[in-house]
Image (cartoon, rainbow over all chains, first blue to last red; front, side):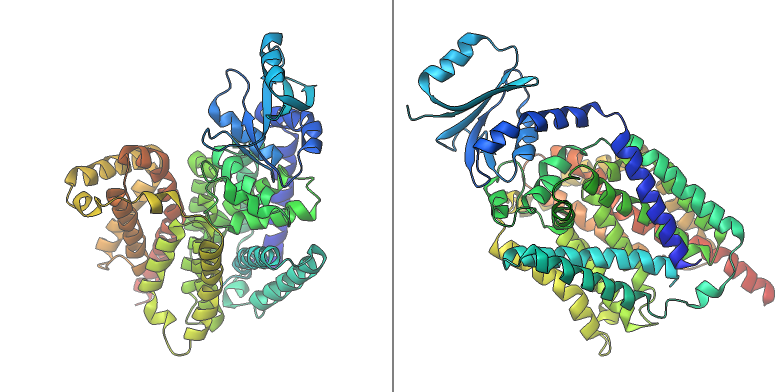
Amino acid sequence: MKGSLVFMLLLLAVITATALHVTKNDPQGERIDNIAVGLKGVEAHLPPSSSFRITLPEGAPWDAYMVWQFLLTPRYCSIVAKERFDTVLTIFNANVKDSMINNLTAKNKVIYSESAGDYKYYITCNLK
Amino acid sequence: MQSGSRYIIATGIGLLALSILYFLSLVLFVPFLVTVPVIFVSLVFIFGWILKNAVSGADKIKHPAWAWVMLFAGVSVVVYRFPVLAVHYGGWDAWGIWNLHAKYLTDPVNWKKMFENIYFAHPEYPLFIPAVNGFFIRLFAGKYVMAIPFIFNFCMTLFIPVLIFLENVKKNIVVAGIFLFLFAADTFFLTKGATQYADTTLAFFFLCAFVCVNYADEDRKFVLLTAASAGCCVWIKDEGCILALIFIVFYSQTFFKKKNILSFAIGAGVPIAIYLIYKIGYAPLSGTMSEKDNDMLSHLHDWGRYKTVYHFFIDNVNKKFYYVKVLFFLYLIVCVVQRQWPGKQFLLIICCMAAYTMVYVTSSGSIEWLLDTSQERLMHQLMPALMYVFALRFSEIQFSLAQQKTE
């Protein structure tokens, strides 16, 4: 079988499969894309070389951390308690109680805050 | 070798070269504007070299039109099923490890920050897949973070059945077609590719080594390609070291012939050297290495652990590799009828499975958890090579019958 024709068939298969993949409805993918859009402001305030601690929204499973880690690459964000960082990215659910936000802002200096989609982001520094 | 197979092998070896050159460019701070043309020229050279004199006797055999129909239909089934089984960003390990590392490698300044994430992201894993995906993501300015790993994994998944088909179609079109459709209909096989984990890629390169070594006597080029494919297994995943080592031991007579030794040294040496540079110079100590306990010897005498591995193995075979089980017994029956021992490549795969078993038996921590999370993937790594071995033997049945008639 002629190799160049086989190669063209494989190329056609790759193009078709990719078109099907990117245009299909995928809730997980859309959720990640939405979070990525909401993180633009956070990304602008955290340099790519930075390392910081991340606090997940209430009720989120621990591995949800990987979504934000993935999207904020090459920055390093940590959820490991024994790792200490001056900068903390706190993520709240959009419907978080004001008292929880006040509790955070009263004890820390807020560098940046933004409400984006389903989440509210606070970058704080523990030196007030 | 069929020229179609050569295109597939050339793509695999091209990706190996790309990953090595891109990794070296990051290590040596080479500007991307220099890296891209160097990689492009290397790919042109690799394709030209592998495809040189590609028209062989096998290509001159006229295949019936339905060989093409069969190939088109098999590929179409994979094309339609694969995206349905995939999610946009792959499974947990994909964006938690492989694609995460790929994103790190798109940043020439901060890529070493990946080594900080030692708790969840396994930064000690080899960089073949992240380097390939990272290169293309960077090439397209970060626009196709979702599509590029998908394309890579789709290619690896599709190449496996097509390569087995092309290698058998010249001998027995029916057997080739059956194997192509078995893969295309295998939801477990396609799902493993769609999750964007590294196992399908490892399976593909291990298969390439099996295919190329069968042509080692024709041309030294194939010795180099065999060694490069086996060496690439090391650069894909740590388990690849076991596979490559066993492969090299089994084919040591071929590799260490005076005329072949240089080809072997170049083919296997380059990816293994890059792997060692990465492991010694950059990667943190892996979890399994640092957690190895002193109970290894006592585990060896613990028959309960062997039993546990066996039960998980049988369970996986029955649930996820049921047709491979049928073909396994069919293969043994054919061997008995033909009064032949199982081939060297079959024994090689059994040896790899035995080596994996010993890793489980001697591992620290919960063996059940380890088996539950990884045994099916290790079996998936070996399955395409095993299917190739089966297909080769079944393809020869018609040939030997025809030969008997002429006698």
